[in-house]
Length: 405
Image (cartoon, rainbow, N blue to C red; front, side):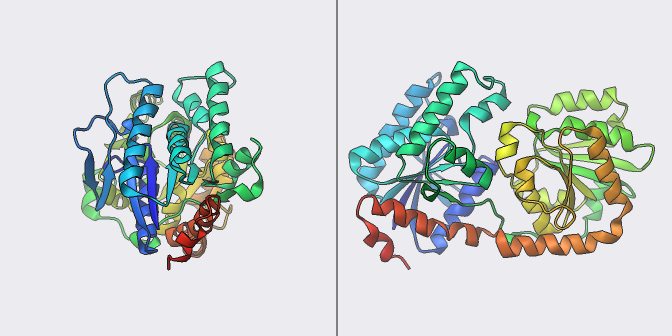
């Protein structure tokens, strides 16, 4: 079976989006499927029509400076049409956002190729968080209408969690038209309960310290300002406490200024972005990870990858009780939830965990077992077999999948 994946962006760029994509592609190769991968102008400026990254080959779409969204979709559609003509895929698999789905559907209709649309997040809700629109605005309503249009016309729809599945059903799709392919991890890629690197601990000034931490992109919805305030409230109770922030993003300068304002600048360590293959070394320095996501539509509907990575490594963590976290975390068994948006609840959750280290071994073991049992990429990607069967059936091509092992 030959699958053409249409992607917003890919490796070598690093994001939860690109890591999920790479995991899907590798597992599909393990199933014996042949995959091809096209990124849209959102990948950025490139002079190459093809590029290899981390063992995967990607076709690129030209990104003329100043091209608007409609122009970008036209460029994407032309590139998809070109590749369908030369590669002859059995189906097109378009991944969020809807800017990828619409060109895929146009070409799919012209070429009579089924299109699977994978909605990983709501485009309109992401725009709200980025500050480019507000909920209920004209742009928001138009974006939502386009998303609904694409969802209703795909041969089959996939999404990453039950929260988004409910949102898609609310747009008029039947339950059987939607399949959840949940976020997962490659458990074998994470070392469980590894000891911290003493030289890195010393380099960061963390010897003998109690370390809170976060690793990822510093977006507003992550609620890292609450974590800085929680740190300030815990200093008197835990004089040796420190906060390790691994990564970077739009909120970094504001967080630095906040730490200075709250008198904890000397207790917050900003590492900057680190290579993905080095991130685990930083995880191992952290006693308690924190995921204080704010309660907005995006976080209520979408499940993140980070808590799963923490579970795979046996790291202790606290997470706000937004819907995306509640879908992943069993409170007191695989992690600990606290009231979203509350500095006091976050600080108390951290303190409770630090004061009850006797429960850590059992929680670590339960979290790792959950990942191995329910959230491996091999298990998640195997679900595409039925998705693709349904999509191919819309064009009378079930025999294609029947030939695949």
